[in-house]
Image (cartoon, rainbow, N blue to C red):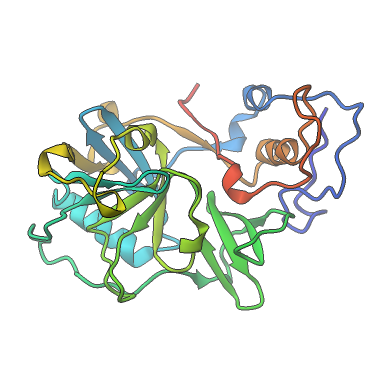
Length: 297
């Protein structure tokens, strides 16, 4: 059985090994680990912090991060409950970067929701769950997972923040730090643009249906904007899961990032031992670790 480091022995690290596990140990695939995982290793997203964005091609499910962006998350939920996003569009799709949606003309009434919010690029690290990876990172003194979201941390500065990995939900803004408000949102659909970390508010991540955004035609104008309104993808509606009857919700389970199963997956990614890999990396980037999501068994 694959060795699984304990949280206590490793000081809340997801993996602690400085060298690969003994080669005599059998290799378990991610599929095998997930199939054998106990129910306690999984959680269901809170319906009060789960968004459904319905596009012509299907539903995009987004988990919000109120611990890290309470003001922006509250404003997004307010706008959703006012049906602000209904009838708007995905109006920008930039190759290897982001898909962005909202009101490109900024004409729709926000119904009294604040138009400017204090930036929530980082937050105090004290008291915030953080399960660290043991490996180096170019953009943060430390990376890992916080509340199940990929995150960075600077212990010396006492700050923690969510990182820009594939599927990350960000709050669009202009040059002023307080110019974001949740009315313009984007999802990362390309290689992790970590240079954005600590420069923009991250409000959550797509947990199901990101392919509905990443497969959209690329905009041909500067920064991936569509040249003509008819090229945009219409948004049928956006709803909070909590506001829909159970029969209309998308039932999902997310692997807990503090669980033994996820720690085993991390070690397997750090030290690949299957027949195809000849040189294990001995490290893994936080954005290379996709947190598994499944339909309930």
